[in-house]
Image 1 (cartoon, rainbow, N blue to C red):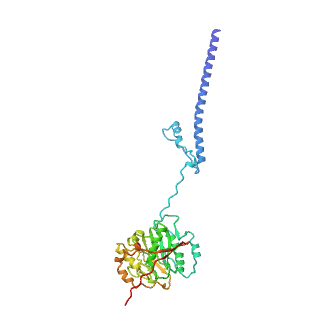
Image 2: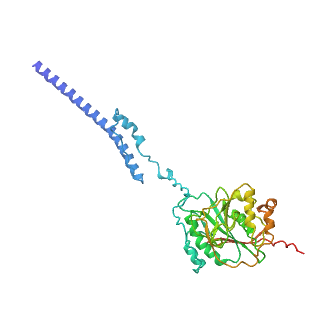
Image 3: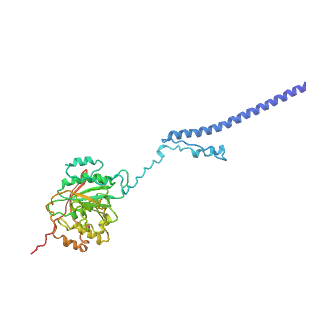
Length: 376
């Protein structure tokens, strides 16, 4: 009887121990999964927040097939892989894509052009044809970065009809050439003898007051290029663009000719002290400029004769622009006069400055020619 009671007692004790062990085991399992469930909740809550905060819809993948990796190592690196939960305001905005430089040969050029002057033009029509040109006759390419900023300077007086044709043709050409440019019409006031070269000096000076140009194209208002591959920018040497005019049978009239349309960089222009101021009347100033270039160790560059073709708008010679009888003597003395006659000695007065939709007009007084020597 005593043994029977002792056996039952031991049986109860063993059951109680087993039950205690089971309870202990269950508690340990519960605590184990509770800790890791919290860890997983933290991870996935961050993951979901990151997905909601991401505008681009990025997805993050974890490589669970790495060799020699343990679950603990994934847990340790999870925070490094998860997206940042910083507020949107602290994020750095995306940087704009840089604009590429404009190509040396723009792809939109068409080559030989049909130039005619029979159509009647109005300034309103020309303005509608060029909606991308901004006030003052300025244009900047939108899809590329031009390597130069070009000021196009036109000496002017009483040529309003010619100006319409020039703007009608040149604005589209310059845009296709991807030129960053501004157009300046330098108007000589009064009816005294015309002085083309001095007006070009004025244009150079006034254009630099308006913007930081590094290239200058000097063009007569009655000359239209017949090929848009004749690129209006500056080169390593002073450039003569109008080498084959129709009035000369599309040939260069003589080797030292530098008239019509030419271009110089700022450095080249200053090296020759700009253009002469003392050529009153028609002729001679372009030959003086050619002499200045060669005397300063530079050479004139030109386009291919098939590309440098120009049409001239036919017209009668302007009043007060008669041939200068002193031009031949002046040309022979360029070496002696170019240091004391040029941009360094320029004097003038701006009377009117106005920006129109297709060009900037600068009206100036440039003085009067000196009296011609009396011939007995």
